[in-house]
Image (cartoon, rainbow, N blue to C red):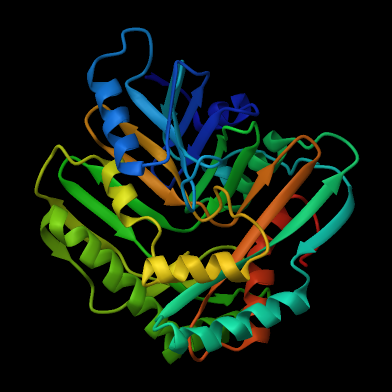
Length: 383
């Protein structure tokens, strides 16, 4: 794997490449040596591991790509062994004389579903929790933005990196030719040697340009019983999923505040020591995904309710984006705060966790605040 400067890697990104910028490193992978897809994510992990272990004399021993929200014939787990890959340290936008790039003027912006329909869906979800013995369900909505000229994923990604110097800023090609890009605050799973880390997020509040309001929002989130219960459901699920794979786990006694440019979140860093070194980062990502943060719990019942109440197919939104290497190390982020980009359009996604105490209007406002990450990157006003 070659090395390069962070700014150079971002400048060389082109539609269809894989790009991931984190607080520690920047990875750019280009071209396709071998593509591996499978609707069974554990089988996908086995196939990827075998391909990388067999040795690739003319390609990096690395696979990159995306897992969908729900695997199926139209949306399989999709990884690529690239033709070439470069890695560098973290991108620091403030250290480079960068300016925002123009994305274009939209000719149409359409919410899917309409806000009134989402309010109804949230109310239906609250009623369904007790009736179906659910602890939580996550409902999302989309925003379709159409352009009269070709959309530049390079410009959107550049602006996202400029806006988000923390978290996980990503772009990856999809099997249908589209690009999934975004700036996720949430680490699903990283594995380096025997060390395993997950940083689940649940419980949210909008940021404010007014410092006093922003501080009040953060304190209200820390004091919110509803958000702490929601976060506890998620952390419990992550810990119980990782426990069979780890000889030791460390779980803080409570969550801490995590900030992005547009949102406050509650987050907990779960750290473990892997029992079996043959278990790769991709195996662990497949085991954890989907978490209650983007689906609900119990998973099967929550996913069924999502299918009934949402009016669109999530595709690779609320899946995972990342990489795994021949040693089994890797890093996977939850694919939220993201958009699917085609030639002349973007579909933005945002979701929120529905609990028994949830208020439909508040949940609608939360998704609107989450759209702001991508709307800012396109130079558009918040919904």
